[in-house]
Amino acid sequence: MTYLVTGAAGFIGFHTARVLLQQGEEVVGLDNINDYYAPKLKHDRLRALEVHKGFHFHQIDLSDRAAFLDAVKPYKIPRIIHLAAQAGVRYSIDHPETYIASNLVGHFNVLEYCRHSDAFEHLVYASSSSVYGGNTKVPFAESDRVDAPVSLYAATKRCDELMSHTYSHLYRLPQTGLRFFTVYGPWGRPDMAMWLFTDAILAGRPIKVFNHGDMQRDFTYIDDVAPTVVAAAAKPPRDDGSAPQRIYNLGGNRSERLMEMIAVLENALGRKAELDLLPMQPGDVPVTAADISSIEKDLGFHPKTRIEVGIPRFVEWYKAYHGLT
Image 1 (cartoon, helix red, strand yellow):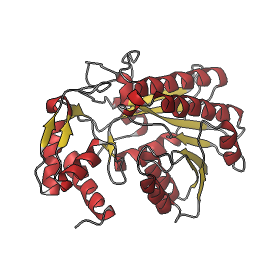
Image 2: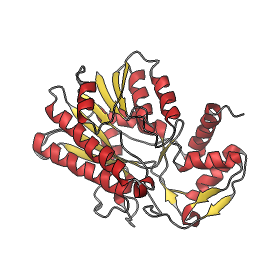
Image 3: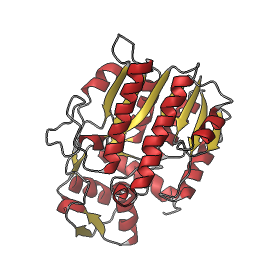
């Protein structure tokens, strides 16, 4: 079967595409390869995918509808995994325009493609734990209110969910939204704490620890995430008369204290971190924690990788990727 994976040069997109290719599926990958972080990492991911003969890549921006439609025109694509987006809570404060183009216009163009495609069967798209905003009830459940985002990034991801619900209702398009919780692991993003802390500790620089370290995150290892994204794509929701759509939390099922994460990272690196304790940053939240009972029940998702295992695996990859001993 042919899958469209948007954001194929990104972290989750790369791993998802690789799972599909290893299963013998054909993957049409799209990515704009922007410079939000080093394009070299994105090209290196693509080179790892291009060893598979079933991979077809097109460098386009999803907000350019004509270029998008031209890229996918040669293919019959039943299943779409839409992971392309402008990421980053803090970046959205200073660069709001990129979030409107990538996250809203890009998502709209994907929905329109699905609506007019005769081959379409199911769309899986990326949402985020950020939609829960400053929710103080933990763990976060899909039934919780999500109408008070604290960053533009979160607002755009919630808008994507609402647009998807509308298209599902009006045009009976089967869709699944996945609210990702702090995904980490090999080939991860350089703007996220795991990479930033590792880089700083190895270089002997202090690490920036916000809210004076009083933070908790539901860390989710990529090898638990990518196969679940593929499993979700293979199981579209039934049309039972309501909108054939669903939203799931995809988290590690355990909220870890930031200082404990740092301790595990120090142990994996064999070095102590110098801490630069700072106040909370605008748009950030002190705690994320996922109630994953729905995705466990419907898709059999059971996260297996605790940070005591996942962080050393990331460190091992990081050192190998940078040629460090």
